[in-house]
Length: 309
Image (tube, rainbow, N blue to C red; front, side):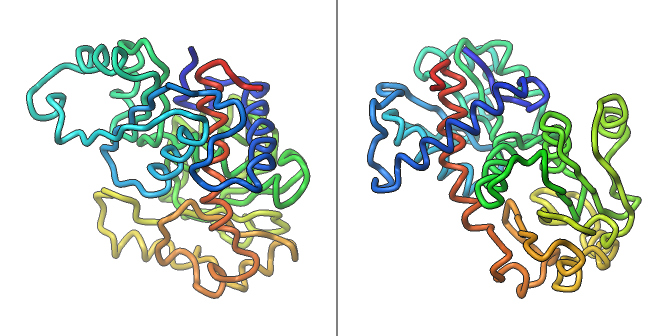
């Protein structure tokens, strides 16, 4: 049994195995429908229990299809319907019930501490579907997408992040260190990675640069990543924050600073951080990026069950 909480905790070898397995599984499904089961139904009879404390569209859909295509089933719980939030039941007791009924637990949460507490008491794998500090399933899927489009290892590419320092960027930073790819981060000084993340970068061999100018970050990039500047439940002065990012909006001029074949990726939902002429351009691969989460999450599930091919 293996957990999937943070990319930091997983070896580069295992992360690469997950991506390689996902590549094979996507190719093998070319002629299959969404609910057709993979050959061999490797997770037949397994139940994935999902709980969402935060809004979700892509994570919810992709994990549902992932377990279905592997031959298992999914059950989604709402936290406001459980004794955990309404009746004061402990995480330990809740975890015991989840372990008795399910075979894996995926949690999208507003608390990193809660993830660790569940891990402590669960006797089944736990997967981080998003937490305040990281979004590992998203970034691993994004690496899959980049390599699929560029047809080369991400270690040979220049990656740029233009936008806020958030959980998605944290996982991208970890991925840069794990896979040794060049990462240029462009964001206002006020919104650069916090001290903990900065020290993590400093203490690990890396190819990461941080700029307070979007143009410097985007220069000669093969891929430009972004995310919504004002995230879900972001308790800030939204007008003031957006004003800081006016010069970090991704438009055609910024894309032209990157390489000619540069692609644009965004984990969605989007806001004003990207112009529509970029978002709907040929360079934008956001729909392929979203769909690929199914394939990678299947391989993450297999990793957790010790069944990677």
